[in-house]
Image (tube, rainbow, N blue to C red; front, side, top):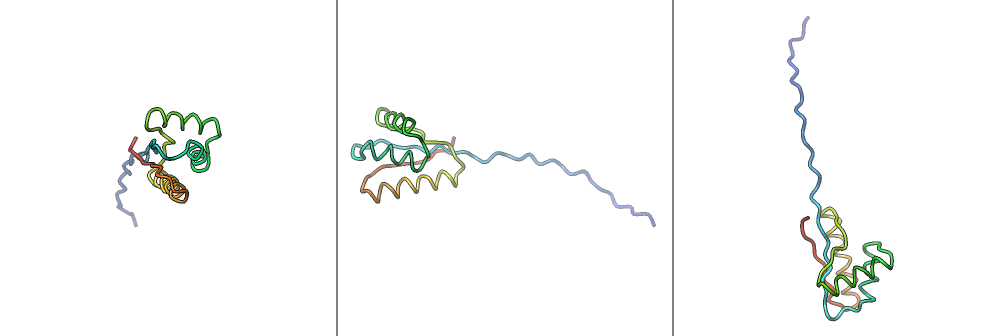
Length: 99
């Protein structure tokens, strides 16, 4: 008995890379530079030299990019920065924007 089933070729789906988000650290006049360096080391795994360079960039230009991540990772890092800042009574602000 012959099977007359027609098999249609699968169309290839183009997979898109997930959107990436820049995590931004904002300057303020109250958070000590040493605390910002600590946050950059703890949350973003920067070594001391990288953390100091970024802290100075944020201090001089008002904002700096801490890293580029998927939405969920960026959101998690921002939450951790705000949590640490709040625990230490600093107004340190961190945000994200689509790359």
